[in-house]
Image 1 (cartoon, rainbow, N blue to C red):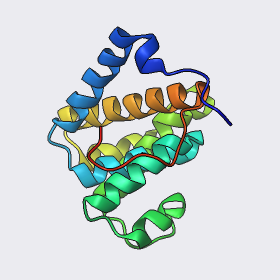
Image 2 (spheres, rainbow, N blue to C red):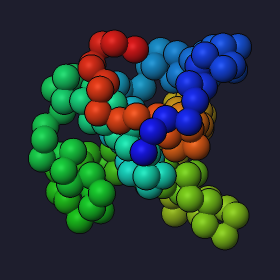
Image 3 (spheres, rainbow, N blue to C red):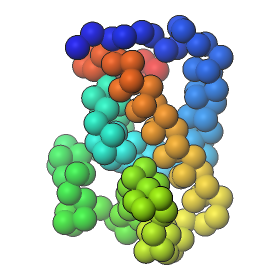
Image 4 (tube, helix red, strand yellow):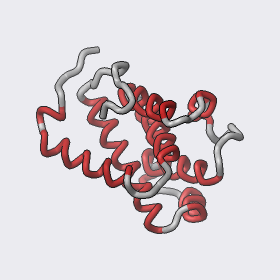
Amino acid sequence: MSQRLNYAQASPRGFAAMLGLEQHARTSGLEPSLLELVKTRVSQLNGCAYCLDMHTKDARAAGESEQRLYLLSAWREAPCYTPRERAALAWAEAVTLLKNHEVDDAAWQQARAEFDERQLVDLTLAIVAINGWNRLSVAFRTEAGNYQPGSK
């Protein structure tokens, strides 16, 4: 599959706006390892090969274990995630999938038990950002496989 267009070149201001949201998420104080797990899980749900390539490589470069990355799609059954990571992953799935056009109370309660209000908003903004990147990359067929950690 070949890339349809380069969205960063086609709309530099739009790309800069997305980068601004991404920068906010990265500097929010949320743990980088938690953000990489969330970004990877959301990218799995959305089937975004480019973002999966990027975020698994970034996670590994930051010290994440291969085993935790392999188990991420089955995180509910895997014992290697902390309660805070589980809450973030449940929240990410609920916000991404919007089953029945809502986020269920169980995901909300689990997230509120682990995150204060600001952290929960910042986590949600990070989820919004990765969903946006996924949609751009899937729609325009951004080529996966060439990303190198530290290059973005």
